[in-house]
Amino acid sequence: MRHNYKGRKLGTDFSHTKAMKKSLVNALFLNDRIKTVESRAKEIRPNVDKIITWAKRGDLHSRRLAIAALGDKDLVREIFEKVEQGMFADRQGGYTRIMKLGNRKGDNAPMVIMELVTEPVKKKEEPKPAAKKATKKAAPKKVEAAEEAPKEETAEAKAEEKVEAKVEEAAVEAAEKAEEAAAENAEAAKAETADAKEEEAAK
Image (tube, rainbow, N blue to C red; front, side, top):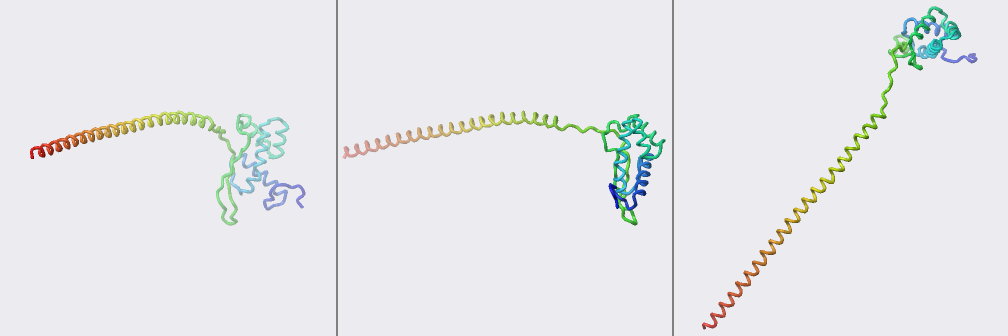
């Protein structure tokens, strides 16, 4: 029975799995990149991170722990020297990268490339100041729009006033013409009555 044995079995017994994981970690530190099965790559990732953390610590106890884990003094010395020179200095974890290659012919096992991440960390740009700038820029536009709206309203009001004034003038002119026509009709009626009286008097 597997009493207190954590992790994947990887299709082998405990001693074989332990030896295989040690050899994969050694190969990764020697070549900076290995091609293996996805489950094995995920299984050795914590071991790689642990050794790099020991190298960052850099004391004698950490060096002895790394030698016990890898079994190669020269490789441990090389790793500790690289870390002392600044490798992984700005990275607080995530020292490995796994890239999928697809399934292997034959047993259809998912294959991956696992490599050490050596490039420096890129800091993310803060989107908050940009959002503030956008809000500041948007505010004047709103003010301008608000200012333009009253101008448009005043222009419309002036146009309406002009139209009303023209209508009133036309109504006044029509009323005056109607009065003049009524006066002319009254004078014509008076003249007709006067002519009629004169004709009667002449008879």
